[in-house]
Image (cartoon, rainbow, N blue to C red; front, top):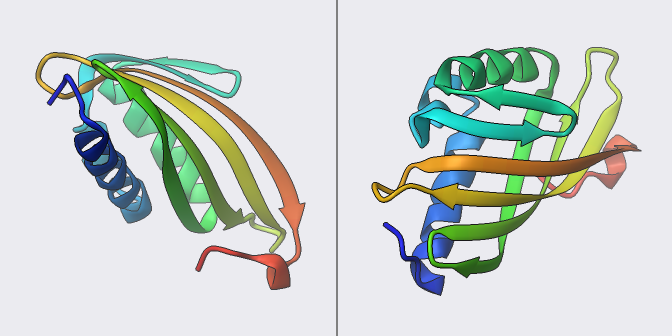
Length: 131
């Protein structure tokens, strides 16, 4: 719960990583406020229903998805995270996505805002780091 210490911020990050690696859109959406605001790359989403639809579509086309999140900084009710994830597309091409997220939480510890900047890099399967 906010305000976060470094220890509780890292716990929150690990919980998020675990949820995203479950590839369960409903589970992931429960960490967000019902009216949560997202910017994910070029998309703007509002609320849990849009989050579930987005993640369902995402994981229907990103196979063997594996994510690693890393603590960057925190202050009060905000946490900054660096992440990378790997997946392959329907043609078997592997990608590693790199990015940063800025999170803002409400007083109940639910994420009210998530702003993600992400870049994808095509990689060879032999170059995968996350398994």
